[in-house]
Image 1 (tube, rainbow, N blue to C red):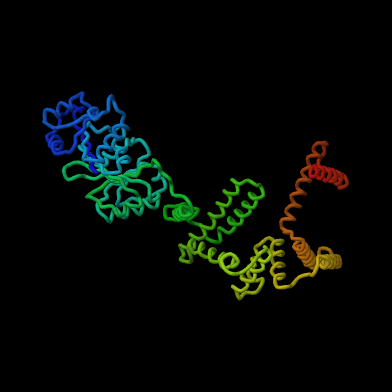
Image 2 (cartoon, helix red, strand yellow):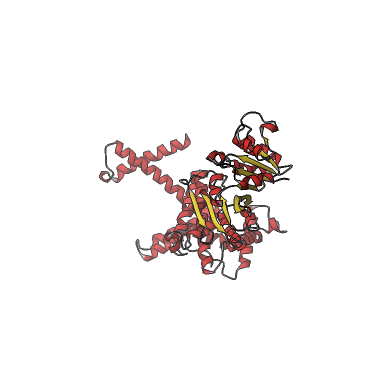
Length: 476
């Protein structure tokens, strides 16, 4: 497998070939020129340098740069090849960049002023474009670097290379390609391909300039990228709001995001649900980042904990236990959970839960150990007993508050007995009531009346109309 060398003759700039260039061509392998129609051909013949044109190799007519790249890469498979062009080597036609990508081997270039200028010309980088030029010693990666032409200068040894490689790894995927430009001992420059993942082990020949292009850029994604971004937001140069947060200040945000997620589920909108689940995940990662900064735990500890818990509490999947129904699964889960803690049966139930959910969870816990009414009729009997107790205390007294609470708790158990979530049932009733009341308001406005001027009997009439309309709509 041969090498590829590109030589700019300088003739199109009014220059003749320099003695150094002619000596280089005399010692080269196969010399190819772009055509046999001009001063390059004449200069090489006068210097006694054997050469061929692409036309001599069977390519007739003017070739586009894609065909030139294909031809040179094919020739280099069998021998060293030097391609001579006028002036600077097809800079505006991407010859160098395409040769690198096509041949996957080093490309040597003569003459150029500096590796930085070589990269700018080779990849046709507009200096007015999004170009980030940074020094390897002081560069700190930012998200905006990923979408720009990134040129890193001053990579002078293996230590600097490893530091640059680590910083690039925080922005790019391991297979993202980079280009290294370095001086050659004879005055030329070398271009070579590498990747972000392989850069750390790349041997650096002296001072190197590294180019990372935005094309083909696939920004890191997935859970690890979310964790990295949250860490950056909490960092010294991150977001002032994020840096100020702690576990306590974020409590209400976690609750709000959970409620918004439930609303998305109820809306049956998959895109909205995906968005809201992302917001919940953001809260989880943010709490984990805060904890890691204090040395309490990391996000990996969070993941490891839930993975271990899922395996432990599903012995019917990951072990030898048997559970053929969801009821058996729930019973096993509760039993395993009780065995994991010495706390009381109800001690670990969070009191911050909505009251109906809290009542139902408490009831399920005690039912799990056998504290239960035998039948639904027994629950009804208890409800009537609680109603009588409410009636027996003075209205508005402290006792009536307690008795109404007992009545509500018993009604929650009635819902549980029927396999109904009391929280969901009450929410549906609230939604139904709201819809009917909106119907009442619309009907009152249509009649040219105002709510505050109506009697309770008149409002009741509109309410009954709303109920009938709602039922007809449901039946229809």
